[in-house]
Length: 380
Image (cartoon, rainbow, N blue to C red; front, side, top):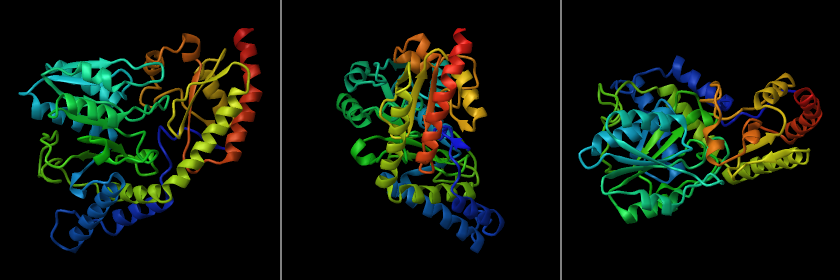
């Protein structure tokens, strides 16, 4: 049996979405800037995708800026804000559990003369509105806090943080990396009050190389890609119509029967957690996101368990896919003060609508069989 439990890293593209993209690449292949019928058709695909994205966030289609994925969306939000507001101030607030596409961008901005405050999270992986308010200074221009952590699934109180930040200084921009939240949690940008929100397509059965940034109407933001002035002069370059249309199609399918799908994913996650934690010295560190289970297998290094499961056809992760190929400890698990033995033995299981109860039971049974063997060789 093949079991894919690494859906936070990437998901399988919907077959219908792949078919649509192939049709666009081979039949409706026009440049959306062209005035003839092929261009008009291509432009229609982009408009439809913007409408799908806007409907999912309860915003306007013109507030959707298509990007090459979540990393570019995060870069655009942070660098675009820094370029637009650097004369007002150079202080940015974030957290110590952000995705590398935020963390590395903040490192870059620090080298350009900006000052970054990285707030520590508590043992639940949460930064509080009070922490953010106390960190705001007269020169603060941006607060960037992720909505759902990609390793442990903590759900941060973005609406409350935004309200607190705006109360302290209404001119501050609020950005949230919603890449692990979008398609998993209901999101209403008006109710949240955020100015910028990042999304990646391949986390919800869309194509890799697709994503968007929600940019609140009227917000002053500088582009980071220049050229022909596409997308209202905010992101130049001929639009990747197959990827954008594929993203729009995936959004439509993902948000159909949203509540039912989410409840089913939660039931699968909970079944796995119950089954695994019933085994000796197996601990759960999951923090609330519907699709993420963070589990420690004491006495067995994460990489050993990962490859042992892979040999049985079960695919999981030892943390963020963007950093799991690097030989270093998880900064997220360190941030929530997990003991070293648990940090070294933690795996992430992440779910999607395609997973089944049979797959979950197979994973539980396989771990139950492998765990005593691996511990024997490790401790022996």
